[in-house]
Image (cartoon, rainbow, N blue to C red; front, top):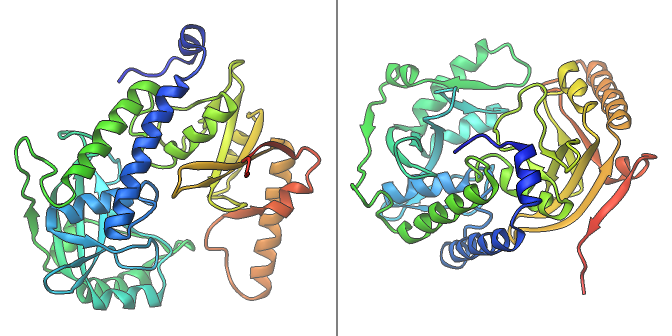
Length: 352
């Protein structure tokens, strides 16, 4: 896929083909509804849930409804529950990450089996298939993490596990069964093929690579309403932005399901990046219906000042308790942003 030339897109196309994109979004919604009706699994395009479905399809498991805090799948014959971890072949980090771990989350692994998988979306049709994995008793991972995390110095409490580390505790690499020409063969073959075809069309219409990865799909829903173009590149590079308008003004998007917007990994470089944007866009999206509920905007200068103040207050409150900041993260509530002088309502769903 060629790199997006904003100038060419604006001059030649004027805007996204909204009607065609709307049809494709509705098709994705039908796939999601299908999973919910038949398997109780909803919101499959956020938190990497559809990657878990890819793994479950190849292992003949049944996905478990829910996201963080619940197991990912269950063996229909044995009733054993599984925890999935995956990374993508195209990823720069070829390890599996445990984020914000705690003693309780580590102990919970004792009651399941862990699958550490690689999703290969480079050599197979997007969004890819699992080409190999490690399977190991959760109790073994729990014991390993209990020891390894004691050496962790980062306040965020994050640890990466590599294939070498898994093999050191007895895990063996398993080459997954992939049927030539029928990569998605299994219980969810029809749904996964639909996701593949629809996402491919969406990429062609928007020039956005791997549009189901990260938050790109939901950013697209917001951009369609604001007549913006979303950045086709993945990742949070310094200087990167989420969207651009006809005048080449850039925007930072925060898209969540509630009116609380998280600003993560705050640093001087990140705050400096925000100051280059015309507006900070704060949106609310129902990820089960793929509908935008509300869109607000605030001035970057005012936002940065508030983020700095809230971060200082957070550090001070933790220091008084004898604690340290685990992650430089600040959440702005609707009450926070509504008090801003620059606060604007750009869109609210018309509820009849």
